[in-house]
Length: 456
Image (cartoon, rainbow, N blue to C red; front, side):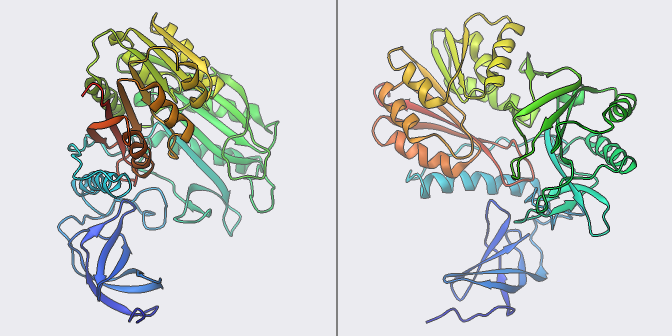
């Protein structure tokens, strides 16, 4: 028997759940219905826009009765932009959704039964927290230069003059860069035609925007009217400490090319995190939420219960932040990272903070684990990309069998998959702590402590 609903039908449902992407979930004749921009408790009329084999996708036609969690949206482009997922509900409701998502992934994907997920650490501030932003540029139908974010499920630029997730000064700088482009007839890059020059405006900043790095991503190796741009930015924005040209000539969706040229100022900017100084280069990994990262690293240190006698291997270490913040409570810290510039930053950061017991190597994580098979490792910290750890890294971790593994992840699904493999024979989960590093978006960070069964 087929689904008794067709496209464009209007149905009445009650929203019972909300996914990590912000889609409400209701049921109609025991069939799941997914409706974006809903809150738990919404009573709505939904217009069906897609009919699948075993579920429906709709959009809100009318809110009959609003959920207590629903709030007025504070962003004019929220319903079209692909950046945020929860600007239509209270922050407390968002935190509950994120905590439930972590638990659901661990139970459904990882197979962990009745797993205890500790109360999520929410952010005290949900505005202007991003210290890294990549803004695409393009032309609208009137051939005016626009900047903003890619629309939901598309690569079309949604114009946005003020994003509430990043510092307002970024938008001011973008405004002046676009005026410079207009004045000197410098066109944004066009993906389909592989024409034009300016692809992205890329920012990094230290806490409270004391130091700002501006990176112009260009399809041309030589930036026309470069001196005019530099003079303009230096005059108007005293917080800019670094202006860099990134050359990306490839016909690709990848933002950054391989070549960087410092046009003015320093090659890096410096931020203070957990009382330590860190140099940040354009391409190196650095958590985007300063205050919540401090909270995460303090939590991680507390979870590991360091005594000062531990040898720590920090995989996917980036510029060395988490390992160095652990160094004063450990015997040794070795960090491994595949991006050479980030390793140089990590070594420099070790010297900046007068850390004597750290070492950083340029290697992928699989190679790094293999190199340390014969060494005594008490703790391994892994903070991999969204795709999680490779199969070989997981196998080698099981073989070298450190007493503790601290797994930090921004993707609960791949986290659950990797934890399932680690816990199959050697390890047991002892703590799961979600931390909201990405308020109002669909992302959530999670720190998990694994103990070897031989010490439990």
